[in-house]
Length: 132
Image 1 (tube, one colour):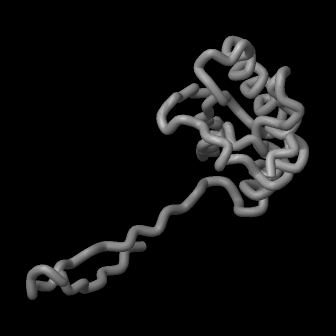
Image 2 (image 1 turned 60 degrees about the vertical axis):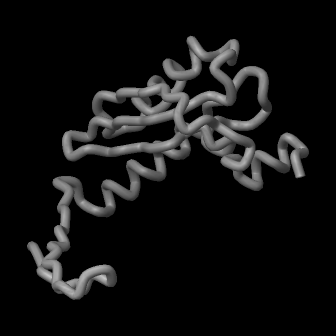
């Protein structure tokens, strides 16, 4: 379904037509919610071996995209490019998410931009690491 709205540009006194596109998923909303919750729970089982907080609460997960075919594309980073666990953490994440019932193929993309900063940590991670 597409709706059309008129927007006046503040810089020019002209009207611009824009379309608001609604998207639909082939998965029922309750299944999407269940899978999303289960994926987050799975991510919370993965810990950096040198840090006593899970990667989700550390803010290392930038994006999780659940597709209609149940595949999952995940974008993540590490605290530093020199992280000793750089070779194993993406595989640990892939295995954890793939273990969720109903999830298809999992693709993990490790990125360095934007760089991770402690500001990305949750309050839970700050408490565990005593970083207040």
